Amino acid sequence: MPVPAFIARWFPQNAYAKRIGKGLNEAYENATSRPPVEVNELRAVVFSDHHRGRGDGADDFRRCEEAYAAALGWYLEQGYELWLVGDVEELWENRAVHVMDRYEDILALEYQFRDRLWRFYGNHDMAWKQQRNVEQDLARYVPGTHVREALKLVITDEGKPLARLFVVHGHQGTIDSGNLLVVPFSRFVVRFGWGTLQ
Image (cartoon, rainbow, N blue to C red; front, side, top):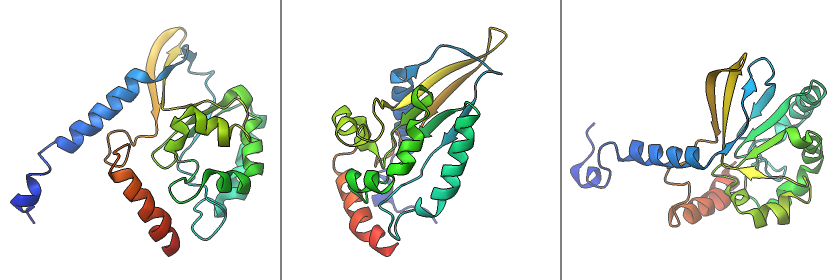
């Protein structure tokens, strides 16, 4: 079914793709760069979109907590890096302090990775974009934590570049990734509407 003309004029063709491309390009340009790593030496486990809540019925992570803790223990013992790629905490539905208090044990386990812990923010935990929020809420449980938007890493094979890795949550450029009109409304709907329905 074709989109009515009065709606279509507000969404020019390819505008969404251009906005996403612009957002990802900016994230790439501002990404943290790491020294190259040999392909057989990189050991990283990647988790994303936990959406940890306060342990209630709307908490998407609650059912996964035991399995996640067991997996983290194994990856920790094996010497892996831990990459948490955004939306780790569900801060649209919850206040940070409630989430952090509920998952204090999980945060302590993640903290054991020390310099092998890489955290990124997503649209649902974008509060971590502000260092003052990290220091006020997250650093109390995971001291020294630095939360990034993106990472660039060159993978090498015997010193020769093999691939370039770009790690990012992927919300960049979407309408709910920083729009000062949309984000507060979306957070309100998620916190008081969707959370209640869950």
